[in-house]
Image (cartoon, rainbow, N blue to C red):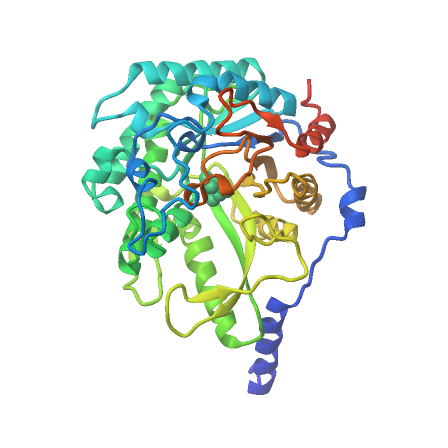
Length: 471
Ligand code: FCB
C-alpha cells in the first residue's frame, strides 16, 4: 500500500515524540509490593562485581602513570588525586572479600585477573601470581560462590602500551594468548568468562573523550580501536574454548563466554528530528555495534564522519554464550549540529541522581532486557549500581532494579542473573574515591581497610533469602 506523505509525517512525528514522553514509569507501590527474585529459576546467579585494578592495589600498568598525571590545563586526571597503589588491598585481603560475599548470600562473584600482573613482560607468566588467583577461586568455590572472571577490564600491561596499546595490530592476538593461558591455568575452577569489559566505554573514554589513557580525541582512531576490540574478543573466545575444557560446576559446560557491555538508554530530549537522529546514532555506535558484530560474524563500525569499517571475522560468530549487560543510566539527548560530543544530556528534574550526576532510571533496565531478549543470547546483568557515599539511595536503587529484572522475567525474558556493582568501594577511574559504589564501604585511609556494610546489604540479603542462597 502506498503511504500518503502526510500520514508518514504524522507517524514520524509520533515516533519522535514517543522518545521524549515517559511511556513507562514504575510506581513506588509496585516496587515495594514485589518480592525480590520471587520464582527465579534454579541456578539464577546473584552476586557482586569488582575489577582487578580497582581493588587489588600494587599493580603496574598503563593507568599507573596516567592516574598521577594532569591535563594540559592543569586539572588532575583523577579528580581527587586517588591512586591505585593500595586501595582495598584485595591482593592481600581477598579473604575479607570472600567473607563479605558470604554475608550477602551471593552465589557468584565477578572479579578480574590483572593481565599486567600475570604477564609482566611479553610471553612471561608469573606463576606465584597465578597461584594466588587459584587460591581465591578455590576459596570462592568452597564458599559456594562461582567465580566469573573478567580478563580485560580497561588496563593494559606497560609492554603493550609501549608498542602502541590498542593501536598496535598485535594487541588482539596478545590478549587472546593471555586468555588461552588463563583458560588453561584456571579452567578447572572457572566456567564463567567475561572476555572484555565494556569495549564501548573504553573507546569513548580513551579515544573520543580523552579522559583515560592514552587520552586521545580522534574518531577515526576510535573506530579502529573498536574494530581491534571486536577482533580481540573473537580470538579470546576461541582461545578459551581450546584451553578450558574442564567443567568446574557440573553443568556439562566447560565455558560460558560473553562480554560485559555497557548499555545506556539514549532518549531524544524533545521531538526535534535532530535530537532523534543524534540519539539514534549514539545508540547505534555505542549500544549496538559490538553486538551486531557478534551476530553477523563481521567487524562493522559506523561512526559519523569516519570511513566505515566492514570486514568478515568468522571467530565472532557464536562467540557469546550470554550477553552481559552493565546498566547504570540514560541520557536525554539534546543533539548538536557540530562539535564533540555531538550532544548534551538534559538532566531529568523529576528523578533522583547519583553522586556522579547519573539519572536513576530503573525502567531503563527493563527496557534493555526486553530489547535484547530476541537476539538469541541468555542475558545476565553483569553490573548495576549507584555512586552513593551516604548510602541512603542504594537500598531503594537495588530494590527497584531487581523489580525491573523480575518484571522482565515475568514477561518471559531469559535473564540468568543479577550482579551488583560493586562489592566494595574502589578506584572509580577518573572520579577516584568520589564514586563510591560499594555494598561495603571502605575508608582508604583506614590502616585495616575494614569492609563496612552499607544499608543496602540488608536489602541484598532479603533478595538472597528469597532466592535460597543465604546460608
Ligand atoms: C562501569 C565499569 C566499572 C565501574 C562502573 C561504575 O562502567 O565497568 O569499572 O567503573 O562503571
